[in-house]
Image (cartoon, rainbow, N blue to C red; front, side, top):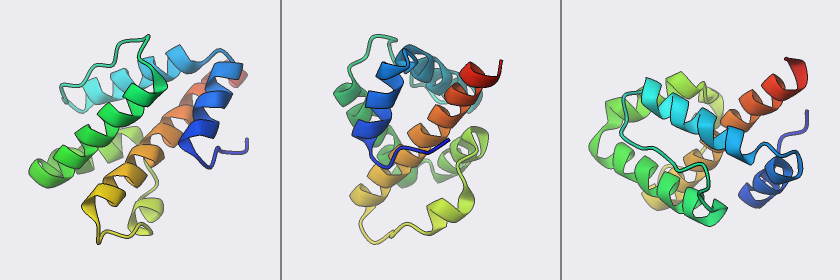
Length: 116
């Protein structure tokens, strides 16, 4: 599996394979497991998904850091990828982490689809 390198590539691949809705379901499932009150509608537009997720991650980093770390653990975002990000600009950091979250969720959905 070759992972997408941009948000747009990820969404395009998910749509081509008919897995966008499953990506949203997986995201909702993991946010629920992390006890975070964020529930995406299955028909959410990709632009809205990106914006809402980015805003949620930004707020978690700023206001609820422990919950943020728990979310990353539950989703299983690779620690070395998070540590490799530049933390100087919180806005850029939260956007990059949002993409890492989506990328990991996409891996889960892709593998379930191809190996179940």
